[in-house]
Image 1 (cartoon, one colour):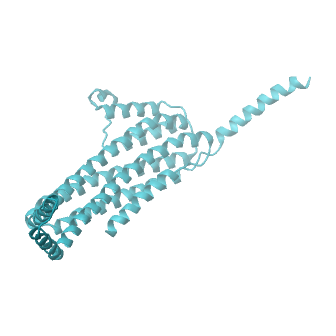
Image 2 (cartoon, one colour):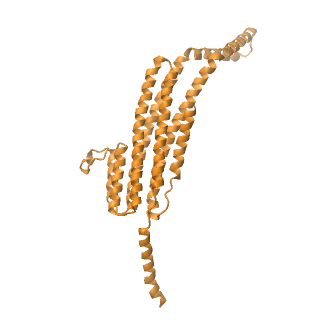
Length: 317
């Protein structure tokens, strides 16, 4: 008898829980926005640090090699400015997400607001999204992102809209990763110019040391040493010791170049990793909205801190 009454009551409770869950406050996206602002700051600092190192390198080479290095440093700085503009677009998108969730609304209007923010993000990183009638003229990346924007617009809830947006966010992050790879290629080219300049500057000195080493190995390779051989080996040692005044500064110049270049590479690679973490943190937004739980941005924060630490190391060289 009691069971007949309990079944409808249980259904009523389940329905009430569902309603209350739907009315629960949406999670605060401010941590994601704030972490994105920090990412943008790291991108700016990374480019400034590497660019400054490249500009300073022009002062350490002969005047005849300076023009190419100055051009290389300028190209990198101009290229990185575009990276900063892309990071600005990430911040604008994250701010839009924060405002959408703060409004606490669900449904089609919210999905359309997210779609508009996503479209603005794509344009901000250099992916043009013209009206639907022009889709046939788009690149593969643009066509893919445009299709995801349309899917976001058609969503009926914020959770569904975020899920639909994720493939586009992944594609945008991948595009930024490729852009950073292009910046890294510029750093590699600048390194080669610096290496060639040092090789040219110390060409005679390096040849002299190599000649001494070849002769020393040849003498030892003969097996039994004569008095003349021993005398010559002693002379070679004295010649090597007498080169200390210019040999050590030369070796230090090459070592400093290699060390600086290694950290420059690490700065850009770390920046790329931070962008990937930004996309990964976005992936968790849909689950956070669904479960009404706190957004996890620890991975993004840690990746950003690692990039900034490398910037500090580069500036300390």
